[in-house]
Image 1 (cartoon, rainbow, N blue to C red):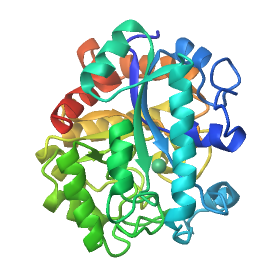
Image 2 (tube, protein in one colour):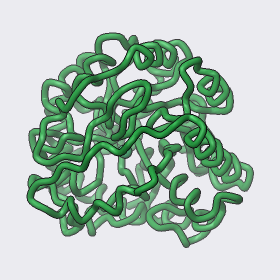
Image 3 (cartoon, rainbow, N blue to C red):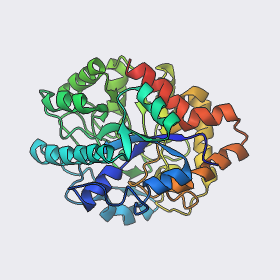
Length: 349
Ligand code: ZN
């Protein structure tokens, strides 16, 4: 079952292509050579597109710490801050990879919800340019202005690492998301600027103080592109019911993260995780947020996902699980892409 097409809140394919081939970005996307995302797998899975993250990796990649996330509890330290010079260089090259993919006809960069609708009806992959962690944004917002003009429509002020804008949440289990200070003064200016430009602010990776800072000042619906329910998995990256209710009250939404460490009640990075665990989170998110405020935010090419899904080619198994859970056609369509379109209509208006 490859319909309804899935529009997804988060992937890291640009990072993967950047690390593999920073000159063309073609390798491992156009055919079948991708890890979790490529065009062939997209056809098989009914993947219509999503948010493509520009992300600046640290000197030591998180994958070196993954073994720690197999322990019953863990607390990975926040990596050190990355300077603007180094970050902007990487960000520009990942943006260039995305433009190259568009020029080669692999996808279309979408700047409006209508652009995404056109892609879903014509079958070309829809890509929203997102930035995960604002290390490449200077405090005068010159880079933000330029990236917005080229297509940037979504920004997370922090990844799990400090920036000049805020502090980020560490990978810690078990833990509440309340792990430290929130946004800086520049961070508050950044939220205002994003609101003015029509750039969506992504709450995933903010700690709880940062979350409430955005909730207090943002004029747009609150959105966490790839986060799960803290009530079911007490990971620092997940959202408490109180946070979910603030998202509901703002008419925002949450995209279900497929990363097993944010799904499992034991927080372990173990791909032997039943699809039912994903469904339990969807049930909880729907109960807290309502049917119109939940979608998907896979984290493909950036995370270990349940073995029954594995790549975007495995997305039909998720649709089947939704049916087995008793979700009707209308709800499945909302979860697969309609709710993202709804919130982007409100956010980018
Ligand atoms: Zn992320």
